Image (cartoon, rainbow, N blue to C red):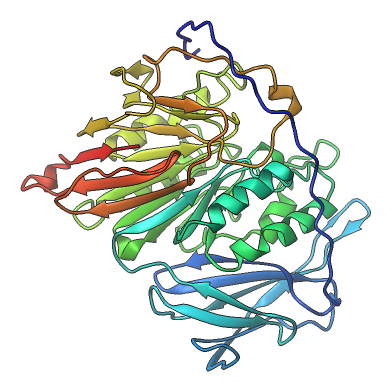
Length: 430
């Protein structure tokens, strides 16, 4: 148990907001639920759904000017069934090579609207939007509105996307809700507990909807899971390496995920990759009463690997409360007290920070009364709802620290002569 520091105050959690259902207004052969994800150094995967399962083609036409497509790529499509539900045709097409920091205009399946995307930069700085437990309620719409106001490069989502919970049409509604943002910037996701939808207690195919709809670059990262349950990718031309861990895949020593993580981290050259970021769903540290110790067995199995690899920051979700810890590992906490509005983290050498995010849309009713305000000696910053940008910029350079909105900010690494020994200074200023 991650122990609480007692405090008289308790959170007044906002009430749940209504479910937002986004209807389909496109003809059967036209694309809907369009979203993109990064694949390798200079390619993008474009994914979408058509209600027409037989005649819609898996083709993307694209170019750098509106309506002028100078290239095209072909892919494939799949379907899945869940009880009486039959999905539409789910298309995946990889386009590229693409130039970095370039706007491309594209059309899916030679039908319907034109979309545009901007590729991530080839070097630092890069800005990530990080959201967890997104759902599809009025809270979700508020969160998406905040994200749309940020000029971010890529969105990272550590699990719990649609909250379909076996009601498969909610996956379709979610895809349509996030399409305006997910079609314009790459969304990189991993699974949460709400992606797990077993059929009659059969867990062998529990992630059918997630795996078919939100395909991630697991093959390119050497993952042996044959699904999106864990993978990794490079960003900013390899200056950042992002590891997406699977809280709901086997992770104990001897498991495929554990072996893959060891290989993946061993392959990161920190002289070329100063930033190493990890995401997972169930947090390893959590001062809320809700979801206590749910990530403990994974922490015990994997934390040492992240620690020895000098992972810079870990993002998690699941708890639905924003919490930012000082450096901590193996249940040992180092802290210093300061006002929530004047926080300055100075994290040096071997460290892991964990951030548990509620910059998300969904509020579980069973969590409404389970949040308690801990003392400031456990964490550095914790709030229930955040009005700042859920975005984090990472830089490399000699200038360290700058003001930013909460949650989010600028993470700047200062390179030193003994960089080879991984002695780097990290400062975060809210």
